[in-house]
Length: 275
Image (tube, rainbow, N blue to C red; front, side, top):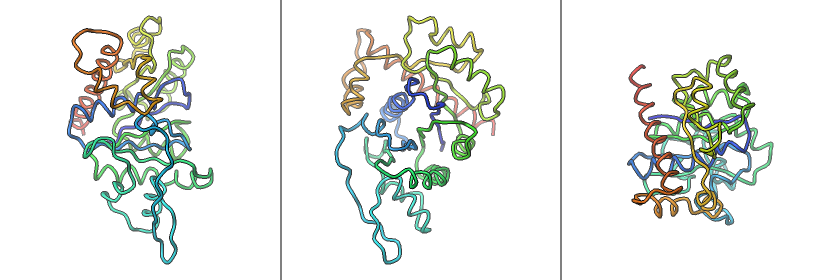
């Protein structure tokens, strides 16, 4: 149905990956969509560790001709594509399940820089194939938007979630970027302020007003959520705090995540109606 890229210029302070994890979890709780999280970052297990405590990855055997290659995750999909043995549903064979029939993750770790750079060349193709099987493909990507692989994925995306920190310099840089780079046209983008302190003068309302960006929302800073992502317990965090009657920092966090998740689906419908 849709490819949604969560993008930042590479700054870790944006909370991009954690925002993606939270929104993917919320979407999977509220909907029956088949959703894939696709991690494109180099040897970065932040996303996977939101859902599981680190452990030795399972290795599987993948055959090319008469040679057996160990292949997992993104590497397995890449090998299948390069050997012309792929179909939309084959990606599921290389994913890990978070919520059965709803949320899966495709990632890779402990590969060489050379192998990673070779894989990156077909990330766009992986996203396109995944989009034929999954209702939503959420891509975790960062870096220079003009770099060829990053640009190709952003151009292929139906929606781009731009992740910014509460930092005036970075906010101004993005304002300039969206004026000079057509990829970030206002119809195709939603902006998130990650790890957002609502008491800061750079809160979402003020930044929205300052930047003249209507589709701009906070993902609040939340200590217990951050602890849960470090312990591989993000799903337990949502189970524990969603639906609570008495408002606190945790219910406020979940309300904002829910608001953004609903806006993403609403925005996709708006864009589809225009095409």
